[in-house]
Length: 163
Image 1 (tube, one colour):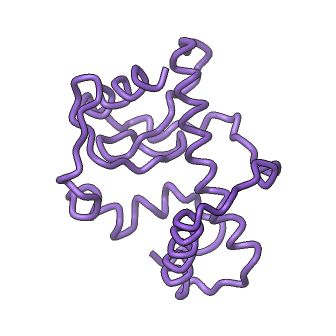
Image 2 (image 1 turned 90 degrees about the vertical axis):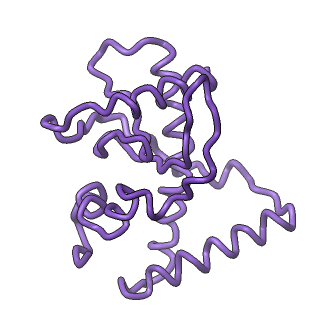
């Protein structure tokens, strides 16, 4: 989208062709729905609290000091899954001097290598994740954004299954 550097990823994403494709359900497969606690759930993208909750993008509950234990547990599980991907991209960026125009090819190559490692049952040492940190701060999304009732129902259904 032409914004390399210190622009928040949520802003870059919202102004990207990928965001428009996700909104139109033209990117994520629509025929891969699963039923979770009575809700049809399509494939999801995990985002941090800066992203807007939608029926295709799952974000944590915003902690204003009144989260239930179940919501806190959901946030921990959500963050654990999201941080793995975030740190993979961070490691790639640190390891390689990437040009923005090569990013898609590098990401595709990394996914191929990851899948190969999975097929070969390569081990993964949890100690490799020691440098991972979980964002403790709250960065709420757009306060003018209306809540999406379907997205809220999907998050609640996922929470019931995870907890």
